[in-house]
Image (cartoon, rainbow, N blue to C red):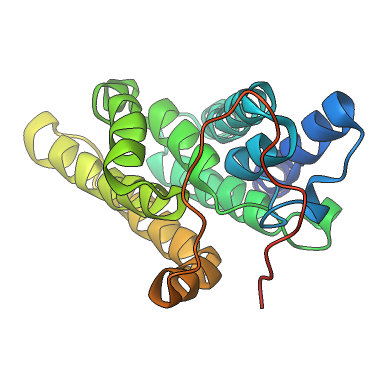
Amino acid sequence: MERSVALLLGAYLLGSFPTGWVVVRLLTGQDVRRVGSGRTGGTNAMRAGGLPAGLLTGLGDLLKGALAILLARLLFPDQPMAGVIAGWLAVAGHNWSIWMGFRGGAGTAPNIGAALALWPLSAAVLLPMMPLAAALTGYASLTSMVLALAIPLVFAVRTVFFNGPWVEILYGLGTLGMVAWALRPNFRRLREGTEPRLRISMRPTHSVRIPQG
């Protein structure tokens, strides 16, 4: 019982750590929630603090997902479902952080971090796909969805061809749902033609928050 509680709380709190808020505050003194989309993920951190802030935030958020999986393996070795639950909670914590009034990011970086920890060989697909999807779509939101769709497919390939645990497909399906839910305002703006395109810049590019409602 104690280990289960430790896993549930630990994974959620790891995901809840507001990396983007901390990074942007340290680098610029701003509150990332008052800039751009108001989210705390890497894309909005880059809008608020430039490329260094975006990269630091993205790496920190990747680490959150990976650490949640490592926690699961420490507490429940050889139980794949524990890793699945920990990954779900890390993404949920990122998207609905207790420290940010149950707001946060869209879950992309912790989702990838958890996937890499679950199956390190997935890096061969997921890491190159990040810049490729960004270049092809031109939108951070569509890039997030491409990656969220790719993760359950990667784990399905692992299950079929590498005898991987099938429950990890459930990990990808669950996080796909969480990412899609978080991106609902972006989908609306894409339909309306008002979604800002992804811009890579060393310097901040946004100072006015994009309405989320």
